[in-house]
Figure 1 (cartoon, rainbow, N blue to C red):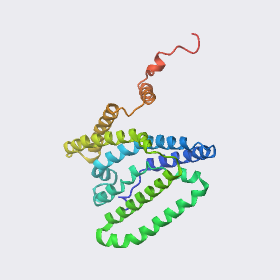
Figure 2 (figure 1 turned 60 degrees about the vertical axis):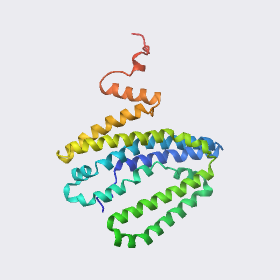
Figure 3 (figure 1 turned 180 degrees about the vertical axis):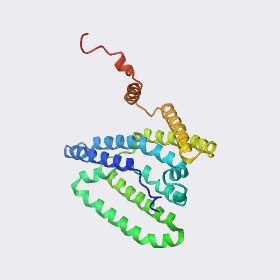
Figure 4 (figure 1 turned 135 degrees about the horizontal axis):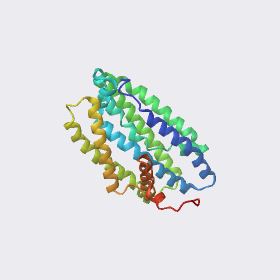
Length: 257
């Protein structure tokens, strides 16, 4: 069970970093009565988190067996179903609304109430679930409780902020990222089948390359990246191969020769 609930450090670090930056920013906007900008900020954060969480979830779900066996050996193959269910917590991570609740002093105790109720529900449901469904049932209870808690907090945040039905359009890129991740996962499933005879680590590398190419192609085709993001990526790739980005290449020198 502990192997199946293995937590990838990247997601915890990313969530903590984003949350620590969001809290003071949301507090400042709330103090200045700029609640509309809080909605826009939250949508931007969800988009950026989705760009990492969704493809990671899709990829790990496809190569879950290769990932576990390559990292922990085939002895822990029984933990793969637990790992697959536990992965569901990754896409739920884009619902980062805790900073909003913390920014409003009058609603801070709401988080404590929700998390307290969450613990009680888990404690009550675990014994019966484990006895009937085993360890997979245990992690399923945890995931469902986490999803319900995030949903309740999200509804509360929507009531606090001036969220309008038209704001669903702010999540268009999130939907595109989900579609790109799904398409890449489908192609990676074929690559996984083709590379099934390879050692787990080699198959993981092959599937990773296939997923990366497929996801990047789908993201570009769906227009997920903004012009600034494309230029930033091109600049980064240019520095890796020793070439300046197109913008820098055409810029005039700052100092006379």
